[in-house]
Amino acid sequence: MITVKLLGGIRKSFLSDTVSIEKNSMSVSDLLDFLQGLVQKNMPVFDTRNILVAINGADSSVLQGNETLLRDGDVISIIPVVHGGSKTRTNFRISNYHVELIRIGKTSADPVRFLESIRTRFPTIVIQGIRSKYILSVNHAKRVIEVSLAANKAGTLLSNKVETDMLMRFAASKQISDAISKAGLQKDGDSILIAIGRESLVNKLVADLNPMVKPMMPFPKNANFLKKEFKITKKELDCVMSSEPLEDLLVERSAVLLH
Image: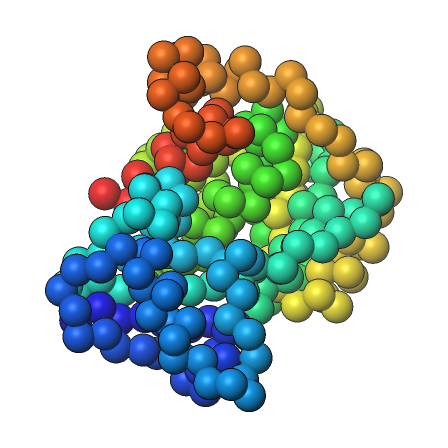
């Protein structure tokens, strides 16, 4: 049996949050077709274009996409992804989570104390700092965050906290200390704060950090660093049939830490 967990607004299409399928094998594509067939005429449309399909916590896009084979016992999470943002802020929704990327410059305090202080002021927001050089693009950041949130739903976090799991995935390391030293917030460097929580509270956090917030910029110089850091060769890139091969390989590096 294959168990499908329907998250966020997707549940409105099915009037349920779980679907059990008595099959031992099927592809993701077959699964989506099957689910489409369950939606009754007067129910909201099941939009398969804006979803994340997580297989036992791993994003299917870093496996074989819609051709990924599902097996007996697999737990599949279907998560809606809604994009948003503005010229001065970068935010989006993953399922019912509001996610904000906040670019900050140098911090006056020790990075650990800085994070502890804002986590104390905003205890219900998941907050993590990532060195900017470990992020290829906003979409890369979003996809890694998706992997962590899917792992949290599936109970397969690398650590006992989502914020630590995200850091380890950006660093592609199973060692927390190694992840912190490599990809963690740095006192003298440009960093990205990831904030996940209620939109109203995240807005307050952004306002609170306003003096040190900088406009979100592209990450054009990070590609060469990331290829070297994660030992991604031209041969590997050439083998990926995608418009964003480096991004796909980086997300794959973060997802395979599950195994």
